[in-house]
Amino acid sequence: MVERVANGLAGRVTAVDVVRGLTVALMLLVNDPGDWHQVYSQLDHSQWNGCTLTDLVFPTFLFVMGCSMIFSTQARLAKGDTRGQLAKHIAQRSGSLLLLGWLLTALPHFHVLHMRLYGVLPRIALCAFFGGLICLQIRRVRTLALITVGLLVGYWALMRFVPVPGYGMPVRDVPLLDPDGNLAAWLDRFLHVGRLYEHTRDPEGLLSTLPAIATTLLGALTGYWLRATTPARRKTMGMLGAAVALLAVGWFWGHWFPINKKLWTSSYVLLSAGWALLLLAPLYWLLDVVRVQERVIAVRAVIWPWLVFGSNAIAAYAIGVLIVKLSILVHVAHDHTPTTLWTWTYEVGFARWGSTVHTSLAFAVAFVCLCFVPVWMLWRKKIFLKL
Image 1 (tube, rainbow, N blue to C red):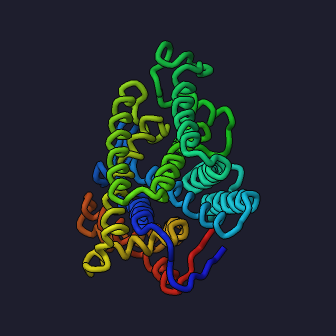
Image 2 (cartoon, rainbow, N blue to C red; image 1 turned 90 degrees about the vertical axis):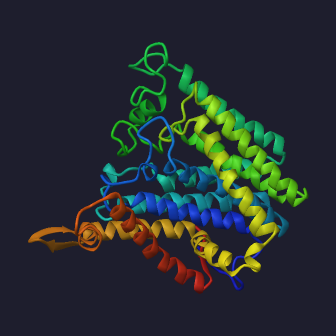
Image 3 (cartoon, rainbow, N blue to C red; image 1 turned 180 degrees about the vertical axis):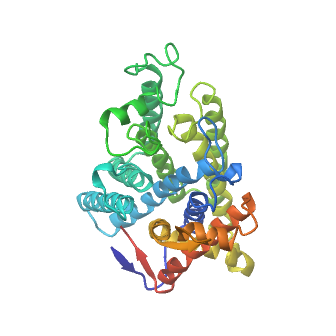
């Protein structure tokens, strides 16, 4: 659905939009380096247990999505929409996201039987669907918090105490979170749903969607906190306090249930939510309380690109995928050898004298700038894509 807004994005929390835009830009940056063999360690995912800056990007997006979910739901209820209408809207929007993810995955050859059904957009769709319905039905914040805790503890119990067929009991017979011998990986192979990203497992697999929904609900709890009548200073300090608590509990739990992005472990959920709050809290104070951007032009210039990206976050991500697909599909001659337009652009435009982490990063930054142009054009026309 295409929505035209007469006067921009009114009635929004600026900090949330900025964090969303920054997160989408980082998604494009870390997903599209010029050379995967030449990447700064913090701009690549952790191989298994552990956490890098890149590992914090996707959960921050889900966290912010959960936060925005509360504002949009409450606004529509205030306008007179029924909960049934909102449930239908959530289902339609989530279905559109799921179909878009599958379409982008299938391009350009449409080998449906060998297509990866999991992925970033399908995970966003599932979290938007289940998270949205939970927030729509559960009106008490305390109950919502208990559901979040239940998802995290329940996922830990499944991964820790359920025997894995062919491997045995975690800890006793097979190491906890063994790459192939964990319950989530086994379930993905057992269901045999399309192609798995890492052949024997998928970082956006089915079972790990449960804690990903918890990430979304933590964002929703933050949305409720931001909507409360509590004084702004207390809101900011509350978010900072919650950030420190989540980071501490996540790190502590990580000693027994390791921090792992590819399995979206419960400790990882808490740690990543802590970092998201640590980013959101000061931005909320500066942009929505003090409103420093109204007095300092430099601040307004700094946040502007992220507001533009955040206004059409899914469109920005989809545009990035399309550009990559097309540039790999198109072949050009290079040193009398056919090569993809993607490789040719990097080798000729950025790595003519050798590929390094610097040239690889420069290419990724240029790619983000390229993706910004069509999103900026949508922004200028006040067109916002709502899938």
